Length: 426
Image 1 (cartoon, rainbow, N blue to C red):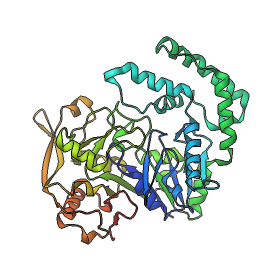
Image 2: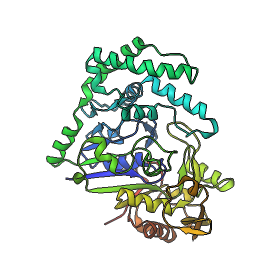
Image 3: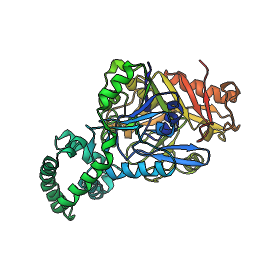
Image 4: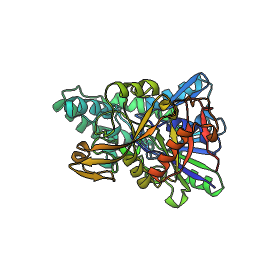
């Protein structure tokens, strides 16, 4: 039995899609436990690129079953579009994709409220994707959410939707100046979705528990990253769910004693999309160079990512709050051309040295990174497949990250292709 959580250990976009795709070949089940279609996991197989927003990356392996847990908020139209796109590419999901009946649905008013709120906030905006994720989680916490299971009873669903729309339309019209939504149109489109999605619905908690008891292996896949966690991230510039490893149990309905290991995915440098503090951010030539070399543009939004040096304070924090006992370092090859590479080991704030990640946003915004400088290897690594064949200075850099974070490096990615991966021997 093996149940492993794969978690983003920075601000998202760490390359979890590729890592989950690689690992899931050796697992029976992969399960997504939080987030929504705001996440984009990119997998490149030979000359074909797959961008998955809701369905776990394991779907690209024909023998792997995939689960969307109750912790995910589902945009029906994005899900159906993703299923159709996979089928068009010759990947069948029939009998391999299961969706929790407890998963909450993103409604049209969630998307409108999301974009309208960001528009109204102007310079103070959070930087959301505008896909309705936050408002859907708000309704979930406020006990006004609509779950997949609610679609089974048309009358009850319509009554709940009418109550919600009475409130949402008032907000849309009176606060944001938007046109009201029509209840009948929404009812019909969501009941049509129910017809299409019905074969995939399952009690995910029971399914996974029985699978684990029978000795099957499960890979639990998080979206976004630790520093975007609603509790442990750079609040309020965060997502609306819990990407940390603790969210995995809640998001699929299994107990914490089931988890055997937590693999943290980190880039060899750091990136961030959207607003919020970013102590090691590079502006100008070096930031542009990292963005260009790393292809740092959002898979979901296409937005350019902010780029900076590896932040050891963030990394240590992520290892601690997730219980990470192994690291996958991605995009090492992006650093191949640097003569010198900097690593942040602490923050200086008002004359004080900080080694732990501060909770207060104002403090974090005033922090200046304290760097150690390491020599670069200035040798291409994208064709290397064995740990011992890495340039000595590249191995030294990875060893430095191990000592800084307290977690061993087990996987190194040196390119976007499946084959461009180094698995470290035990």
